[in-house]
Image (cartoon, rainbow, N blue to C red):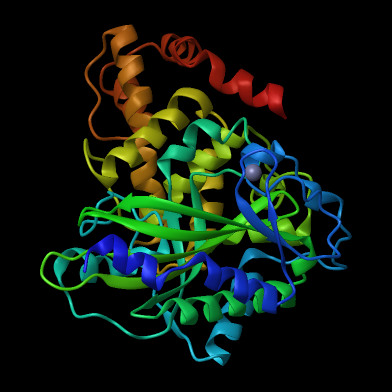
Length: 407
Ligand SMILES: [Zn+2]
């Protein structure tokens, strides 16, 4: 029996339809993209279009829904989820280090990568019911952080991961998510669930996936995907991968004007790009990633360069500490906070030192902070202090000014 035939026998849209109808959802079709989606009969959402951001033009209707009396922190929300999934028989899995050497990507981009050993290294199939709170990095979001709301290069993927479940069992897992989302105050009335089938390839051959996208008042919160992954030396593995973005859930619950409102230090000011770069860099250093020219370390270097070139002079080390503490709530640091900040600082200031060195044709910098470098220049090489200060202004014309103009 061919793979295609097998998949279509296991996964059928009729089963989805039946499941959703039983739970009071109505099937609809999007006027714009033609996709099938589901909504509740009493919803106030415009149901002529689906919840996909390209169809609803990024209109975040949810911000106008009535708010909770008390705001919730990300970790409070993930704890409520963990508690719920534990109560229904799931095991809470320790998240992976963000540097990924076993799968197809340099950095962990989704919780489903806890299965990388099984998918890519022929390890034993794991049948445990798993819930994981996995910090992730997605570099492809970087160009959109500044222009598109609800986007960040790092986020926490809260997900249930299950292997060797049949399609019916997968739909029952979807039911658990509807329950916990409702318990968190995100009512099913305000959701649109869109169906998409796609062809993927994670390095073991092409496979089909059936995805259900959860959109809450215009905001995509997550998706439930059923996969049948081909294997070279054994039959295809079925996976139920249901994952949501914790920070998006946070935004949906708190309904602040901007996604970043609760994701930045209260007393800090600056661009989204600055906060996002510090946030992701903090996750990388917390996981022990070091600056290199390829692999995970290359991303470290890229963020350090952005910070150095555009935001040096702002309180970046304070902001990095803040985000180190944020990630430490979800993933065990593999290095002390101050050692991590020092490594980030060396990399950020390496770019600053190089610029000064090239401009003034001075003795070359070592692997040192700008303070240490200048100290050496002044006390060992007797370089004029005012020349150095002026070079700082000239070399980094935007840093201080840009920061001030945003505050
Ligand atoms: Zn659509």
